[in-house]
Length: 220
Image (tube, rainbow, N blue to C red; front, side):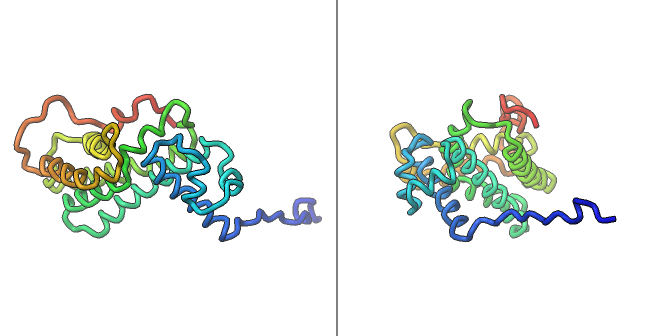
C-alpha cells in the first residue's frame, strides 16, 4: 500500500543564486573592514557603498545590525581557525607554525573586533558556540604541539597567546588602525621571542587558560 508520505511531492528549497551569495560575501567583507576602522556603529549606507551594493540589498541580507555583527564574528572566527590549520599543515617546526599563526591572526585585527562581542550580541547562538569551539580546539592543539616538542615554554597557556594578540592589535585611542601596521608585527615578534623555550625568566602568576578568557560567555 502506498502511503501519503510516499506519494507527496518532494519540496525543494531553492539555493541562493551565485550573485546573491557574492553580494552577501562582499557585504560581510566590507563590514569587517569598516568595523575595524570605525567600530560596529558605522552607518549602513557606508557599508553598502564599500561593498558596492545598494542599501536594499544590504537590508535584505541583514535586516538588523546584530545580524551583520553576528555574521562578521563568525567569519572572523572561521578565518582564524583556517589560519591555524594552514600553519600546522605547512610548517614542520611547531614553533614556526605558532609564529606564523600569530602574525597572520594579527592581520585579522582581532583586538579591534573584540568590542563587537558585547552584551547586546547573541553569544548563546549555536553557530557561535560551534565556531568558537572549533577555533579553541585548533589553537589549543597548536600550543600543545609546540610545548610537547619543547619549543614553547611550559609556563604559558593559550590564553596568554590570545590576550597578547588581542592587546597588540587593538588601536590606541585616536589612532587609525592602518597607522599601527608598522608596530604590530614588530611588537608581536618581541612577544614571541619571550615564548620560545628555554624560558629566560620565571613568569608571575599562572598561565591564562581559555576558560579565563571565556568570562561571562554562556556555556553551550
